[in-house]
Image (cartoon, rainbow, N blue to C red; front, side, top):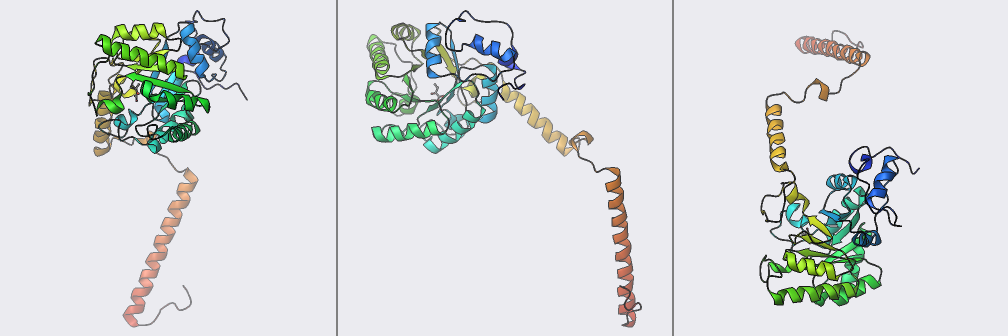
Length: 348
Ligand code: KIV
């Protein structure tokens, strides 16, 4: 059955803001909104839909996601891409950087996000070490992420990963690129620095971007690239750019969910806007819970389950019956032990 009355919140019941891109073949956000006014299941976005958003000048909204609950919320609110980022290693698993994240961990995150997602394109990050050893190994790992439910994979690197990207796309795996600050290797080399500040570094970024487009990536993340360079790259490419700390000219934006919700407090990059301060809200809730359990305020009657009257009466009768039986039994034993004879032989 296609029609389901499921989405009564968020994107799926918004009635206004139908966008200008109403006459194309790909379902735009406006199409999805219209469909969902009639409570029809949302249509899953494809890499082609994402590419077409650049042509229609519709901004692409991306957030990271690593689990079922947050992914469902983001998806039902109309996020276009859910990036199962290797940042999950830091915000979900507590690693100091993205370097230790394994394929197994990425596959667990990906399965949870994919299960929750009805509309967004799910892009899975290839973790450090999963695509550098050999092209064959990279293909194998990218297929594992696709089998875990991702619709595409993302890898960090410029000209040096062009052969890997070509090999992956040739076996049918859609690939998103990631240049500028590359967190997997930045820590080992120059540190977390803004990219594209000099003409030389700008030219390198521009040629990396062109090479990746040629190799077949369907989109490109630009991390901490200067506004000017991000603008040039975005104008040069026919594939969409997704910026993080790279200014407003990019075709889309991505943020780490736990940063923008104010949950992850270990770092606070300048480019992050906090749309909520959930860490405080969660702390308050946990404090109140502890207080209420300690003082027996929680659980209240409404949080408890009760027997019905007849069951309770039966229980009482049998408890009282048992007790009387026990008392009788005890008396018998006492008398027996006192005279050494059972006063009621055969009457057990
Ligand atoms: O892992 C991640 O969260 C990312 C974003 C920063 C783009 O790669």
